[in-house]
Amino acid sequence: MEEKQQALLFKLAICNGIGNLGMLKVLDFSMRYNNSTDFSKEEIIQIAGITTYQKLFSESWDFWSKDPEKLAVYQHSHRFITILDPIYPYYLKQIYNCPVILFYKGNIELLKQNCLSFIGARAASVYGINVVRQLIPEIVSNNLTIVSGLAKGIDSVSHQITMQHGGNTIGVIGTGVDSCYPKETAHIQRKMMEEQLVISEYPNGTGPRKYHFPMRNRIIAGMSLGTCVIEARKKSGSLITAQAALEYGREVFAVPGNVFDSQSDGCHGLIQDGAKCTICPQDILEEIQFFTI
Image: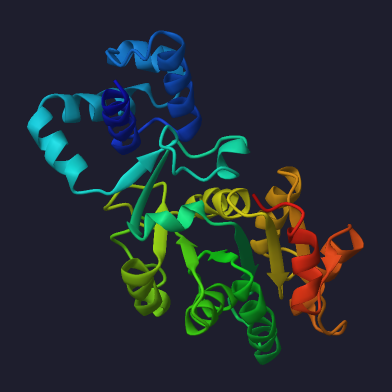
C-alpha cells in the first residue's frame, strides 16, 4: 500500500494547481482512511481544498491519468523519497508545511546526518569568504553536515570549503535537480550530485520561480539543527531562512561585520534580537552539541 501512496504523491507533485499543503491534506486523509489511494480528481479537489486553480489541476490530473504507462516511465526517471520513508529527515518532518516529497541526486544517506546550515550574501566579500574558511573545517570535523542553497556567494563557498576539507554537504535548490541555477554554480552542483547530495521538492523540468526560493529556505532551516548567517543586508533573503529557523525552535548564529558596512546590517539585527554572536567554531559547537540526535 505504501507503494501506491508513493505513486499518488508523485502524481500530485507533478500536477499543476495543487500545493504542498494540499498534498499533505490528501496524505492525511489517505492515512486516516486505511491508506486509501483510489481518489477521483473531484475528491482530491475537495480534500486538498483547491479553489482558484481547480481547472488547472483538473486538466493536469487528466493529462497524467489518460496514459498510466507514460506516468510510470516519468516516475521512474526520478529519484525521490516521501515523508513516509524512514530516511526522511527527522527534524524536517517537525516543521509546518514540511515537503511531502523530496527529489534528489547523490548520496541520500546524508539525510541521516546532523546538519547545520550556512547562508549569506550572494555578493560575498573577502571578509565573508574568510569567515567561512575559518568556521567550517572544525565544524565538519565534528561530524556535522553543511546545508546551503547552492546560490552564488556564501552558499557556494560553504559547499566548496566543506568538500575541500572532506566533509559532507547538502544543496537544497529551487528548481528540478536536472536544472542548474544560477549557472555560475552549475559546476559545484554537478560535483555535489556525484559526490554529495542535492535535493529539491520540485520535479525534473521545473525552472526557477521567484516564490520557489522562500519555499526552499524553509527546507534549509527545517532540516538543520541551527543556521549560521554570514553577511546579510536588512532585506536579505537569508533573513527569511533565519526567521524560519527561529520559528522552528532552532539555533540561529550570526557573524558580526563592519558596523559601517550595510552588508552586515541584517546580521547585526539578528544579534540584537537574540541570535548568538559568532566569531569562532566553538560558538556554534557548544550550542549544537545539546541538540544532536
